[in-house]
Image (cartoon, rainbow, N blue to C red; front, side, top):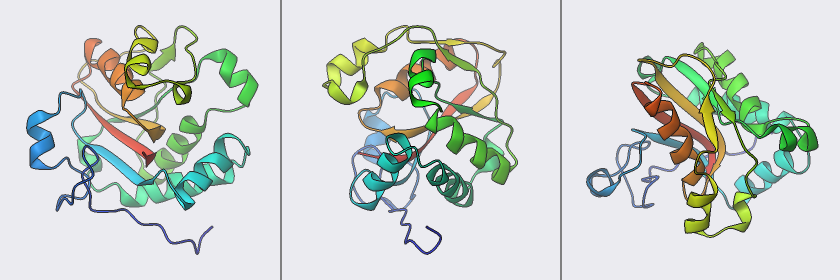
Length: 195
């Protein structure tokens, strides 16, 4: 995997338009976006090699992919001074037992180790939700109402929330709002791949 090309496109994670800021939303999306996070960083698109890597990790149980993604994410993260802690998006305990690991936490652990930003498990899934992949946009949102709770002190913290894939943003919106409602100062997003 070390020789595999890894491209971070200079595109807006909101609309996909070309963007000179690389990680930041474009001006149009900044004006229109009501999402609770400030900056979303995606390492790759969920297509081709990106989809293959995510599927190898989640369904093929190839955890070496998490190391690769975490290292690349740490190398790509340009503004560590804006983040106090790294927080992985949690799985519900029943899904964790079935899968055997939380792919987002594995990526976050490697990112934390390589970036020097502390990882804290501030979120817990408080009820089982249906799999997001099988739902449309509206169903994804309603599926996640009340799905997370804070299990630590996040007052005043600038949080980097880590997940494997950003599709509609429903999971990350719910998790971000939970952190902000508990007193986090701000939330930024880091995902391995985006749809």
